[in-house]
Amino acid sequence: MSSCHDIRLIGNFIHFWARQFPCSWGLGGISANKSEGDGTTPLGVFSLMDILFRPDRVNPSVLPRARPLRRFDIWSDDPGDPQYNQLIPFGHNHPWSHERLWRSDHLYDVVIPVAYNWPLQKVGGGSAIFVHTWRAPRYSTQGCIALSQNDLMWIAQRITKHTRLIVRDL
Image 1: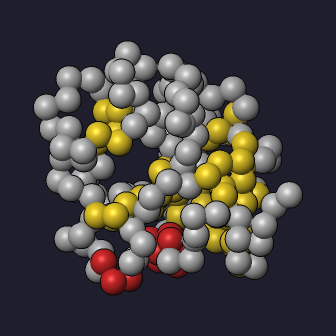
Image 2: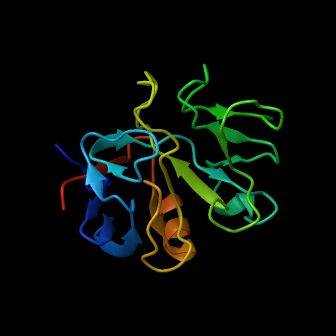
């Protein structure tokens, strides 16, 4: 059973709190069989992890339940890495492939990791699925869900520890 506080991806929109927000998702579409690097957004119902933000770009009082990113925080996306699909604090010397969370662009100024393929990771099952700011309106992602910065901030201020992301077939 879904809750009115769930985030639902329906077509080209995120539905949340009786509002809808234009969004984009993976270049490869939606998939029930996601694998690492396939560019698809995973199908399913997922919890959301901690909201993360860039403290030099986002006022912490706007997102009081969020955790600040640190300059060298990374997310492992290498199936060979023992820390695959996990946040690795201070990972600047990490020898495996990874996603830098402290970016020069604004994609991860606010980022919400999705509990996809987590906490029990299937090696090669896909990693680093986030809700984040889009590059441009409707610009596809590598599997994440992306929204405008204003819409993402509005949603991030209202999600709770019980909010789920629901991704269905289009």
